[in-house]
Length: 332
Image 1 (spheres, rainbow, N blue to C red):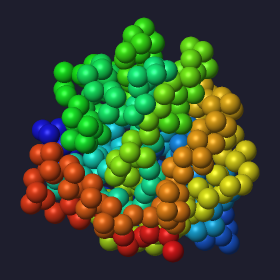
Image 2: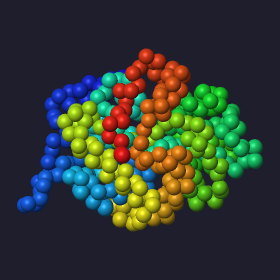
Image 3: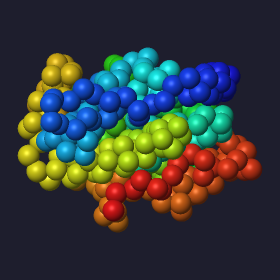
Image 4: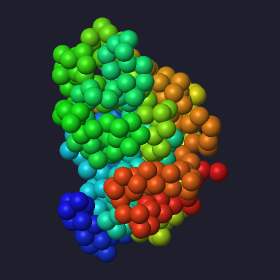
């Protein structure tokens, strides 16, 4: 938590020194100026960011007066720090814990939209006939990244009675999982199950936490409070264009967006993009089971998430969790 407190101080200092969202790009003669929005993603370019790339490729951002530049994430990239330093105007929040942590530390930033109604986080097990549900994973070694131990693992312990002695270090390498048939590892439903099946020749059992009741959002757009105050129209335009981009990416022709993704991330292949896009659709990651408007959030959903997390002692029950988000910019 010390790092987050330092981040809060840095964020406040930076926001006093600059005015994000006021930057204008030079326009051609006779053309209106467009507002520069640098948008930092949480990982290398992939289908899980496809709606943003679609909005860029199709001109949805430009038509709304924005000059959007997607700043690709990766290992070691800290989106809140990029926001704090003024290196970007908007950023991607991977999960609800990130947003709530910032609220707890008083960092002046809010989630303004959630483009994944279901967090795509999964637990992956070997094709063992004894494993038919998440509850069957009690007592088994589970490979988790450090960030996951303080995130969805909290919910798993509360709901299924998992214990910390099950945790093993996950380094984003499937080899330890493949070497131990009792092992379980984390992943995204759109990524690791496919690569494991393709490279190891086994079809793993996959448990999407969201379909088991995990209430967190994913792929949120984070905006500094000062940008919200000084240029709300730019924030609203970005959210609206991104919602259109996600709708078109999943239901239309994704080829232009995929080309931009492969340009930014040459390691990405078309088969990975195609299967990920299909998983986003079949699991209803973006729309949710209720078919909510793309990008939506609700007070009740945030309350449910906070109640679970605070009930496990992650946050004080007195925390004003509503500081973490605003519903002001949701697509109509």
